[in-house]
Length: 333
Image (cartoon, rainbow, N blue to C red; front, top):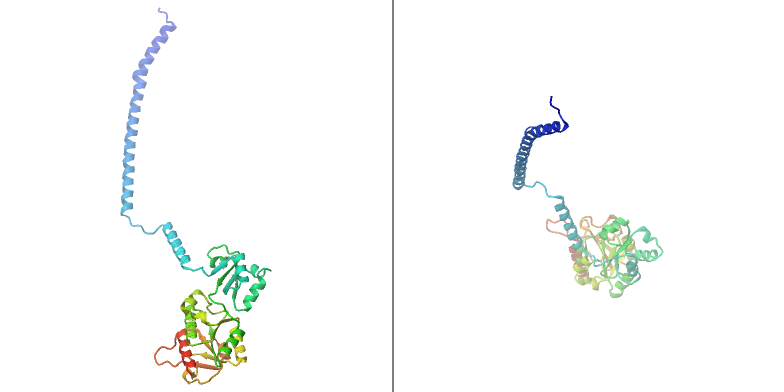
């Protein structure tokens, strides 16, 4: 009987194990690994091809497809450009804002057309007396909110107050009456009722100066102020014509009557033609707006309502044209 030693036993088992491992388990595993690698390679190639095909299809479809809507960025840029163009068109050359700048302008002798301020500014000790005096002189003062003032100045640092300068200084009604009577025996003064278009106001001022009117009365509200547009349309006539801005037009007409003026209103419904009006006295001629004409309260203050006879089919005239025609008839008598 042979003795089986540990050395022989282990060596034989090791050889057999090597044979089994080299030719059995390892060989099968290698085959499996090769198949797995081959499968993965084929899968990755197919996947890449599919991705490329999808990408090509996507790009091809995007090239052929027409865009339905513009992007939001295009719309926002377009709106921003339009807003900047609108701000650029708005002229702020005659505007002043900020507490210190406005206070100095109010304290000086500059002509002011309009003031916007918050309630805090209007009631403050620094501004109250100045604003109250200017309001009594006919300057239009509006109390607005902080947000509204920011809208008017397009987000400027206004500090709660802003103003618009006037192109010409105004005088009081008493001064206008004294001036007109001192220079002429039968002066003519124009009064505007509800004319808010600055082009019409400028054209009326030009005609009034051309026909030797002694002055113009403009109400504080419901009327265009003496802005740059008015001065431009007036073509220099504003420098040679006295203007009085009153708080209440009807009250001003009563004061004019007390000083011997006849109040005449231009109206399409007037029973007396302006060509048949023969009165010789100091006159106040009231010109109303094109759409509404002279207000009912103002018509009650009139001594005469005169009409301009029209021969064509047009039922009314432009306010500045009607003023020019009436002045031509009244100054020619």
